[in-house]
Length: 114
Image (cartoon, rainbow, N blue to C red; front, side, top):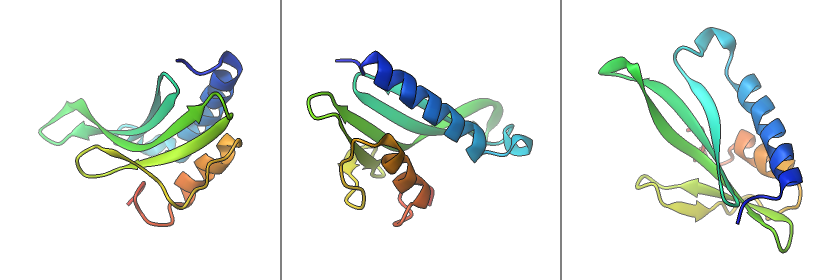
């Protein structure tokens, strides 16, 4: 099931602004932040040039936001070293997407931004 259109538009706007502001323009040839939508999930990703071929870019997952259409709640997930998603215990489910984004930005454990 896909995100409801209004929720999708809100998330695209908020994450678009976040990605634009997160990385200064003068380093965007070295690192980029983007997001991908799939069903009720939104995955924040970091892209960097591949060290052996700078013309190719690599992608690393940062965080995943999952929307429950029945409750209207968002939950936040972090990835382990094998790419498996785990519920992030330091962010309670919320109807407010900004709360999830704030938890990623604060990164209390260093799991998202190192």
